[in-house]
Image (cartoon, rainbow, N blue to C red; front, side, top):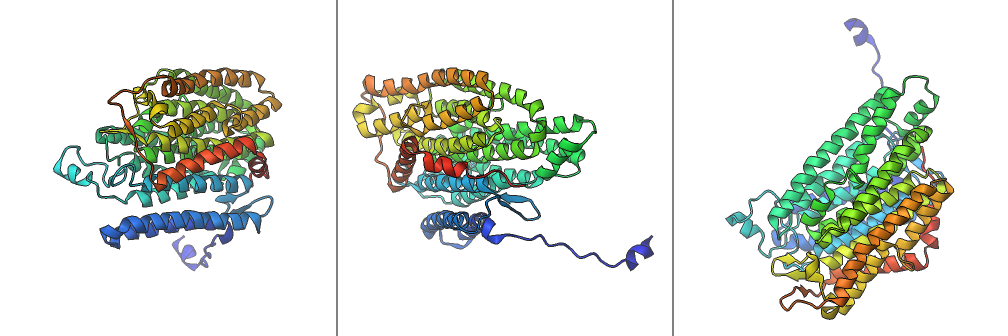
Length: 522
């Protein structure tokens, strides 16, 4: 046997073909992330901040330009697969990439602001014990810059995740986007113990959900003998073997995806992490992670699991209802504004899941539009939250927001508009997003689910209105928190999010047309 093996001619290694123009936006982001690590290693400490901000912004803008050039030029209408069909660059992927890059631009502006919090809202090491000499030195007003490469790596992982065409690539991208976020949650300059607790909870629960995803991947590979989404769909459609491995794999894999999307009942990390993480990181996580997670959910359900949709749709109906109930009902009991927005995101995840399980062209386009609208509204909302402060940092207890309209009428008006958008009031992007998602669901025969969604959308509107009433019809406390004048970064991020929320509410046709311009490529 050994002689036979030695005499056989060596087989050439097949090098996968790469469509570089198609994947250039992702390559730019990952390349900038690697350069950002080198900046941390070799640049003098005094020049790192400016270099990191410029590098991050240039990389995101450059990736956006490359995306626009490709999408409006050589991009095939039906999409293209590259890296041996591991990455699929189709119209939904291009839409999600554009959304992620725009949201990441606003998040980097929030992270880089040194006016709201002197020295920035983040420090360098999450694991230092609070109160020690090393901790006091680290939390002085020196700007720490390790967060910028972490942000770029997370962004690159998100872009790869929502374009992954096989489960193994999706799992690797999931870890690339998750690991930096675990670290970023523990980097708060203020309230260090709360931040470290959030990081530990997110890491432990995230690792647990990744294990579910990986176990589901293994079962699906055992069923289909492939991790490609198209091959799994073909095996499910044409196989006469037992479906035990298939449905067990679907269940475990979807649990991992729903965890990342903050869908109830797989949401337990969300309130604590949103509250404990630095607010700029919470903004980045709440907006971008939701987009990436539902991008992956849409691709997996629409491509790999579409032949078995009648078997799992009923289960996801129940999951969507549970998510809406948890988000709307528990949101009513919250006294911290960041936790309130966290439960709001859980309710919105239920609304998004309705569009994801519609399994129609309108369901896909409406969910993509909803992600765009929700991302910008949430980004701006957390930007506003970062401006209301007391001696210990951000004043997030609802009592601190009493009478805010008398102290800062403009800030209260902006936050009111954003809350109304989250509630789905007309003339905002939130209304259009819910309208198109519910319309797609009605067209697909999901009227009972839409009725439930309307009921709990009305319930959720109550806790948004409660904050508005508190800001306008309560007297501010004499020793209440102050409203910080935003720096350029925070001000620009709030303006960007608010403007997009308004524009998408008034003239949504362009974004809806782009979202509905094509389906997933195999």
